[in-house]
Image 1 (cartoon, rainbow, N blue to C red):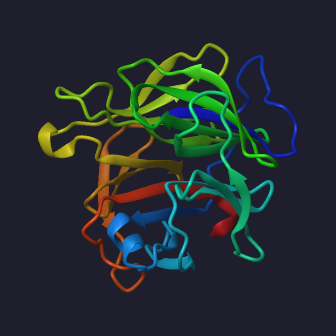
Image 2 (cartoon, rainbow, N blue to C red):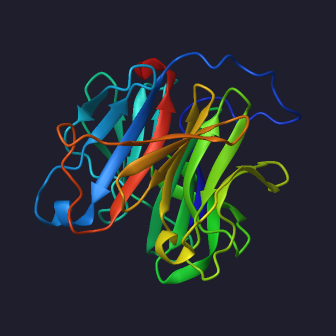
Length: 277
């Protein structure tokens, strides 16, 4: 996977030290689901909202099969990567209609897969993997007008990056690593320093059965003092205390909100949106 940075018409990334913490506030967990079997048979793959305060689910968009997604409250859009021919798009909050930007353009190999998206200081980042090349995953920036990728960094080979999330409260970029190696490589949530590219683990993850859990961590988000991890193909989200790393509970998408998992591999991208409460 590769991390990509995308310009979205705001100020450039800030450097020179951390910013003061912001209050947690309220918000909602955004979940993008994609089931390969459902897509093949024309069954909907929805973009969902989960209210962490009430435990209620609802569908924001009934059919938006995505491999990667992030909520951008400054620009009032969802950025999405459908995985269909490398298409990058946006979904404005007011219309909830997909606006296609174009196929991802890379100076390297022509076939890339975008697995994670996150916005920091007006820049869209993405984790990207090269089709047919397992290591290393890479960090890119993405131009949201042209869908052009610019290489920023290569991750260490022991990391296999499945999702990204920017935590504005602590001004940190989070990376979810879930390798398929036996024994597995680095597993869990890591903070990526965008100045030095150092990786620091912030949420450990214990595999009780590594043979059944390989590549199972698909999505990450943080909000309301909690870390959320989407587990595939089990259609569930595990919630941890962001400060203590202690497990809190497991939640599943109810059948009346989303179609039950099909026969294919289930992908789940996560994001946190303070404005979508």
